[in-house]
Image (cartoon, rainbow, N blue to C red; front, side, top):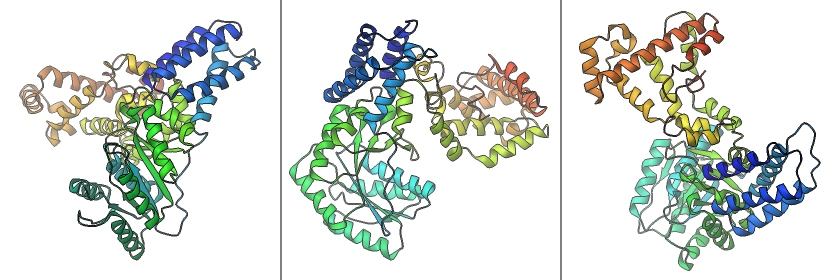
Length: 457
């Protein structure tokens, strides 16, 4: 997300480097570049105008400290104004109501509403230890009801059944009553989407809202629609008392106009953003962290949180003990490390959160991708359990069988075996306390996207 905007802003800051101080002239030039970058990112015109005026006012009145370059001062101002535009801080869901807390989901068809219901259920269940019930009021699409039932099973949430002959408000009321009897903490109500805003749709969802009186009414919108997302959100907000917005498909949005427009146009906070297709790819929206990503400063806090939530700490501890005892590093260990990295969004997703790597990830996209990692996992999956545990037994005939089993060449198997052997040597050095030696040994030997950070150390 924000790849295009990040590149343009990085270019602007580069132009300011080497200049002794910020003047009205170089500020005007920089702001012209920023304005163009924001408009190309599909940020709403009113938001761009307000943003540029605020940055200009502050930049011209800023006393440049001798320890800072003009570029650093300018980028700090831009960063702080971006945070202000997007909402200062993350606004959490209000779940303090008497159980069950009811969350109503609204939005147009195709925005990813049903999937977001399941993602939110998983997040609340795992991070907040809530008992969740989900229900679909989409009586126009039987497939939507079945889809939610399937997703509820995947995230282990309670599913309240419904069918196309029922009235949406009646379904919602019955679900809330059942949730009370079952001592649920949260009920998430999925509603029907439409291809466009119409009076019938608004009337129906207003009726549902009046019937169940939710503590949270979230508008789910596709970020790739740019400033149209903000316009649609405003239309819904005029009809419903929205409490927040969920931005979906942000992983496919290189512009970011929706994130920078919605808060100022609707007055409502972005509470979550969908960052992928996986069922756990939903993150709380932190304006300060998003602004840091846009400006290439990384998002280390989110990366740390992701590691804490998604890395299997028992496996990591077992591997550390194994290495310490000098028992080596086999293909089972290598596969575990690669799968955990993929679970965290792959190498590109991790690079996006590292300071100074956001802009670089676009340039290295072809080199640093997850295709190579998937190929390596496929090779390991083609091995027998004994071969994974004892790599030394893999010789000529075994290599041919492994290559045939995964549809690759013997050269690919040889390459993976060489990399596993190098990793084993590095682990041995690390087990003896030679971290510096290990890092020196790693330089230039790892396959694309398999640096030390990617291996979980």
